[in-house]
Amino acid sequence: MDLTGNDETMILFDLQCANGHRFEAWFRDGATYDRQADAGDLACPLCGGHDVEKAPMAPRIGKGRAVAVPVADVPAGDVPAAATTPTPPPDARTMAVMGAQLKALRALRQKIEESCDYVGPEFAEEARKIHYGESDPRGIYGETTSEEAEELEDEGIDIARVPWVPRES
Image (tube, rainbow, N blue to C red; front, side, top):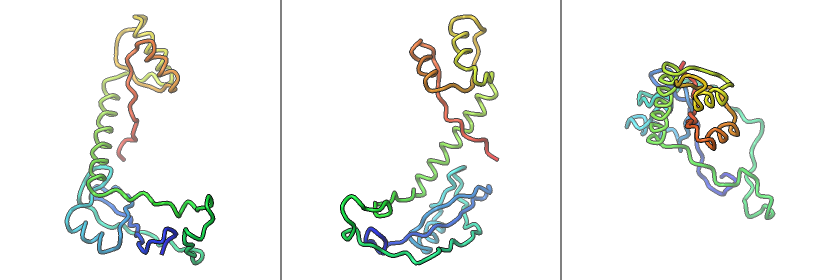
């Protein structure tokens, strides 16, 4: 029994897709993993691949026995964080969507790097020069602070904030 009074426990497995991407996933029990794997419901969050298997993992050994404390016995205002309802792990469909989004962001990064000039931390200054005709019009990318980005938008300079995901290794 956990601190919320539930008898349910979850098990964490390290998984790996056919492309070598490693990730963790929570399951109600080993049988749940087996059913989802057999049905092809597991998906890699990085590439969306459905060829997923358990990866070797080291066991996690606790240092002592946990003691369950019923929430009703804890004074008001002193409820431990573990007694709150945990966020359920994402299901296979959510993992597949996340993988597709990551793949699209990686493709966008590649397109930007191939077709635009990197101006680094001078992005705001260079964007202004292009906007006011002091520099040749061209696509640029780089870094800027949130404050500088807001100032550019206030000046009517079109910019886009793109989540810069790591390249696939």
